Amino acid sequence: MTRLTRRQLTLGLFATSAVAAVGGVGLALSPADRAVIIGAGPAGAQAALALRAAHPTLRVALLERDPTRLARETGDAAAAAFAAPQTEATLAQLKAQGIEVMLDDVVDVDWTAGRLSLFSGRDAAFDRLYLAPGTTAKAEAIEGLDAEARYSMPAAWGNPREARRLAAQLAALPEAGHVVLRLPADLSHPQVALNRALVLSRQLAASRPAARLTVLDATPTPALAQSFAMAKRLQGLDAQVNWVNAAQGATVRAVDAHAGRIETDAGRLTADVINFVPPHVAGAIARTAGLVDASGWCPCDTRGRSMLRSEAIVLGDARKGAARTLDGARLSVAAATDAQA
Image 1 (tube, rainbow, N blue to C red):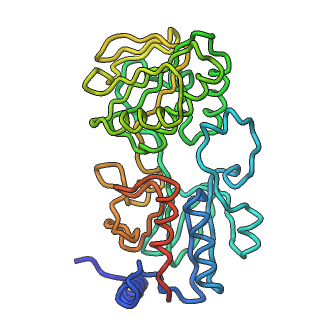
Image 2 (cartoon, one colour):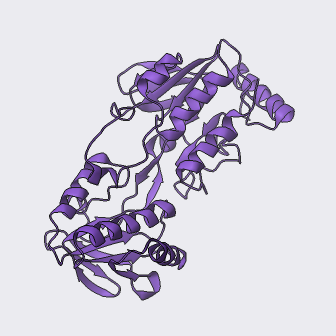
Image 3 (cartoon, rainbow, N blue to C red):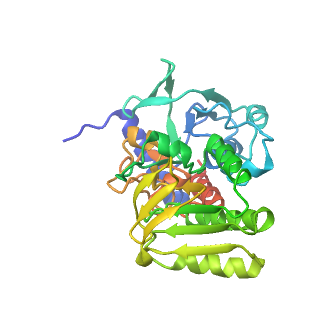
């Protein structure tokens, strides 16, 4: 039988009383408590501000490993078309609200002691832990898909360096060039994928009208293809697009990045630019914290409480079954922070 510590029992009583009182996720926090949010993406930064607004005396810390995450990069407009949504809050705004911003990475979570072990060697204590892990690429057993191939065929899926690389490749595309967008069967962000296909179509129609786009859509339903066809028609896009679905052989079996070749169930394709999107799972910290099930995502209730660790609250895209849109991230924060002490 597992023995509960006084801390765990107290957190459980807090959660129970808050849920019973207001139907919230259990944010009954005392003024002396410290809430730590891991991940300064749109969900994490918004959660930090929401907690500060709901609990003005609460100690709130936001931990982020990427020092550029809260920056406002101007960058080039072409790369911005493939960039992930920026955090709405700036570093200055967070600090102005009394939120401690920590640039570090988490290597271990001690739930019993309420402590985080950080990459820098420091520890950070918490009374309530929120995680906005985002997503990370999942390895695939595809012949030829090594690190060099992934560099040559950038996903540009939340990675600003890859976004710039893809934009540069498109800028150098021959007048009658061929672009391939690969979408995996277990696609994590359908709306982002739809937007990517539309962005590529618009760019080709505007700057390379003789070029063509092939979309290898390995998802099991025609929903994405239908949405694209409707949006393309409504937007009056006059790009040459060949949408290959799973039934038509969109599954990729091998790649040769040097030759720009992709072997699919439908045969071989040769392309000048390949935007190769991999499948995704919850970010690494979610696995470190023990919040991920066999699906690779974090099972949670409707208010974000982890079903594997009731002490944890998961925000944003890492949740199992999440909509994985910017609005979905905002709603996950609202659901988790509506409960009042």
